[in-house]
Length: 443
Ligand code: DAH
Image (cartoon, rainbow, N blue to C red; front, side, top):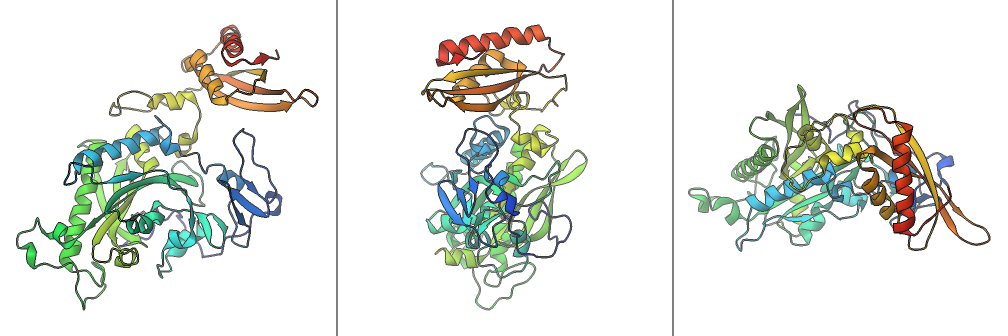
């Protein structure tokens, strides 16, 4: 049995240490530039309009807080969104309720700010410290979720029997080609009553979900009968195998590995072969009955899984580096745009022809919106535009007029651009910004 995978991120065993407070020079740090409202870490941690008093557990950094609310998984046509939508579609079409409705409801907008109790549940198991150590805390009782399993209990308490939940999760970890401190998971949970679990089995009427005097073993929890566990395990693996085959096609090589997770027992990991190596893409298992019990669903049993959306997207689209998901580079993003959700996508590595940049500054009217400007640049510059960044903002001390300066980076995928070509496009952008957005050029 394994204790680590990408879900338990460290590759090296590390002792449990309480998270350290951030260095004092970060305490009043203003976050990096960018026009969005910025989270602050001062005496309080400010995030999403809430404020959390700093204490010895505070270890979240401004850089991490900047990612809260970005929600790449909800950004249309982003590769993580594409994966999420494909998974949703698979579940919608394969599992239909009695009234023709989708069996699984989908949730993708729950805040990643959770209580420590939500994240770790009441699990007494010391393995939870793996998670604790690697998490980002605001203070003693509030943190950024380290996995989407943090919401299992609240959704079950709300009465849901089958759901999918996508979201950003946060773990302190090294950064390399397959690890990043923020990534995305999709959680799935399905509960069964005894009738639902046993009705399809011959002689199922005589089986029961629970037994009074059982033992917890490698194979099962104390209160479950072995029949319950085996049927749930079969249903769980069947569900996930069919999902993975739908995503990757029949050629994909899979293997199941037994492992440990705090919210499930027994637990498994599914690995997929990618570039000659086995890559963990999901964790799953039979839900701890204690969780169901405390959520008011103790008469049911269930399975749960947590998929790594980046990992799946890397395998599926052949994306070599997890950092690319945060790229604003058009050459990356545009490869995933298209009307047909199911079209084959194979990522083409970005070429490295030299970039040229040109800045643009203008006085802006009150109605000015950055997104309109980005759209306009994208519209005119098309594939030549690699990046647009806000360099500077200025408010005139006397008139109160505001101006902004952007840098546009131009790069061609297949050849070296000339200054002349870039100038022509850039001037078009200047003119269009004046006529369409009402800005006044400062050129
Ligand atoms: N929460 C686990 C993780 O992030 C993944 C996981 C494992 C989710 C098993 C589950 C599960 O729902 O049943 O590492």
